[in-house]
Image 1 (cartoon, rainbow, N blue to C red):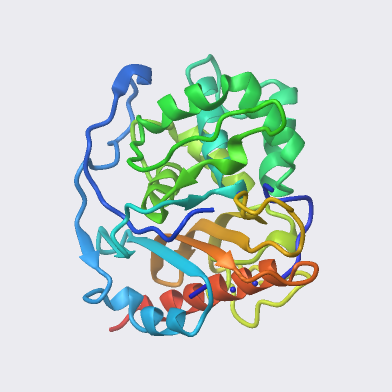
Image 2 (image 1 turned 45 degrees about the vertical axis):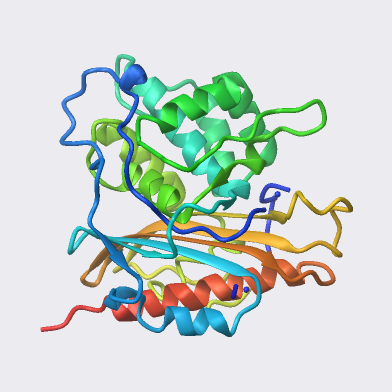
Length: 324
């Protein structure tokens, strides 16, 4: 079960079996500073098994028609419930969705300084953040990852959110590392929730700027969780076309599975999409991870993964439609 379309810039060149989500440990607050924010994410959430959750109705059956392995996590802010397809423990590679995590780390770093974000941030940092999120620029991501302190610093930041099954990829002599971060859909939903809703990790101005960048993704990368909220069809090259009634803040990731030695079109793909959707009676965070999307010439595996994710996103948007 898993599918996809076209891209710009680059995802990150990584895999892991499916995933699903659990909820538990307490956060390490060693990086926390006093902040007048409303609340942190709960250490224990109400989790609805997929078979009982109306928002995920029809998705398991749809995914049985797809190749590969898909994992879904949905937080519905209207009901306050989290819905998971799977048990939330097995991991997959992030590819470029980890850039939303790197973004959040830098936002927290600068929110403690005088002034408001982004005015309080150096131009060099905002320039890199903009390129990393809106165009998925790998050079910008590698620079921000390295100068922030790499895998150690990002892992420490993630304990504040907290994430439970995310292991940040470390730089090696031949690879920048971050693209091989492993995670679950449940953890990715928690990272996006930190940007989307009030909490004590990110201040309001930091969240607003982060969401602004994720709402400004270039058209060629506007696929995934935008499909359904911004209508259908969602075809390349520009995919879903923004609907002024619905806000979609997203980040996508794609790469050959790093377990494949050749790193060419003989390799299967990892294709992911995470984001926040708000409008027309809906308010939710969605993370869809797909791994082992079938190999094929050019971007065939990527396109397959995109198609799978968009099929999930359309069904969730429909399932969450308001009823009198």
